[in-house]
Length: 408
Ligand code: F0G
Image 1 (spheres, rainbow, N blue to C red):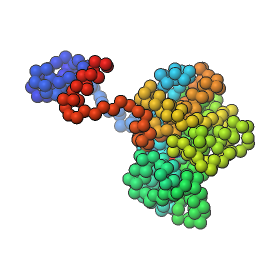
Image 2: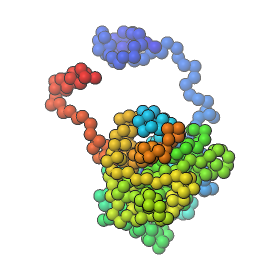
Image 3: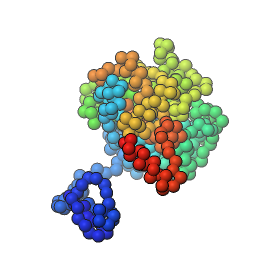
Image 4: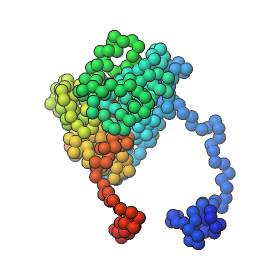
């Protein structure tokens, strides 16, 4: 490789230092000695956008003409070496669900749920939501030519998520109360109003899309891991993922199933608190409270599915305080370059606890599901605290940079 100045034509050896032309300060361009023989993969072998429908054999047989996709799924599974070492779980992986089209795992479910809505002849969809479901349902409804209506707790949705719903032109109903109140309103009204198609996770079709997380994990690792750690709110996702693993066990494509760990925030832990006490049913929380607004839920509608998933898998529920959620969010960002929203970081905080308790051991392969992107909750990201310097002008900026260079 060589470099050539775009302005004066000077040619230089291809140093990886990033500089401008030493003669005229012009910008440089990279010049390859040899042109590549072929750049694009042959037409037939290129992956096409099928989204979760690439697993159509295992999904509801909705006619092709009704199927919706925004190329969701196929998210990266990345090894977390630094964080894994710190937690004493060296075989730690993260499934980056924040890289879905609207920034959360909900898109997998909406691809199937909105397709079902379209096949059912619906013209409008409705969801109660702490934000991500609202963003995802809105996007997929628009993609399918339907009208989205979202019901959210007033003041209880992170800025990025609300902006998404508004951007897609959803009608946003803000309820004084918490998510559970919003869901109660939706659950009741959809019983009477057939023209509103509900896409909350009590919709079984939607959850089918979410089980594809399990398929992709087994595709990547070659078998099921020892543990899968998932943040729990309305409790649909952990049940869906478990269903996916069980199906692979039944089909013989996995030789074992993982133990499922469901993590709740301490102020919104109806399942974890009951589990800890050895009870058989959840302890409803009337006023759930946590900075992880996505999982600020006191009466999860899917509690029984989630409970069975954890029991059948010999897994566990645990809960974590907000300060540990913030620590985990910071650790993911600074040790791994992964900015996630607080609910996702809760899973890592929960894993830290399980490792400290010795339930998860150093030989275990662990997958933590990072459910939502950090941009969803810009206030939480900004509050992690980073050095922020203000320069009045160019001269002061230079002075600051020279100071930083000496310390770099
Ligand atoms: N992580 C994120 C980022 C979420 O948005 C949610 C749920 C969960 C985890 C928990 O998943 O409800 O299946 O147990 N968000 C819902 C919403 C409630 O309205 O967006 P769950």
